[in-house]
Picture 1: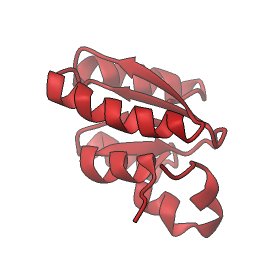
Picture 2 (picture 1 turned 135 degrees about the vertical axis):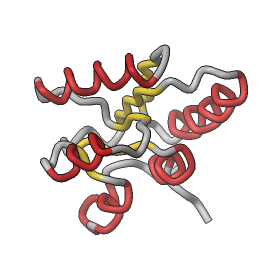
Picture 3 (picture 1 turned 90 degrees about the horizontal axis):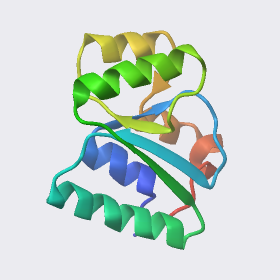
Length: 120
């Protein structure tokens, strides 16, 4: 059974999707996965995504504080990354309540959105 890179990222690595629509082939991921094992896992996902014709862009941060600040800044100007790593917390719930982000489950629940990202 094939799984999309976005499903794997969301299900295994705890990322969230922004509410803005993006090109079906472009994926920008903001994260702070920097260890050798984390990089190896992302490389497998990136290679599969690019092999299927997608463009993968990474925005690597030093830690959650740095990432959090940039994500809030980018959300405020309407240019968020496609997906980003986040810790479950009250500010995450607030972003969902205000419609700034949506979960992978919300994306997959909408049949019309299932074609946003190619399957890899």
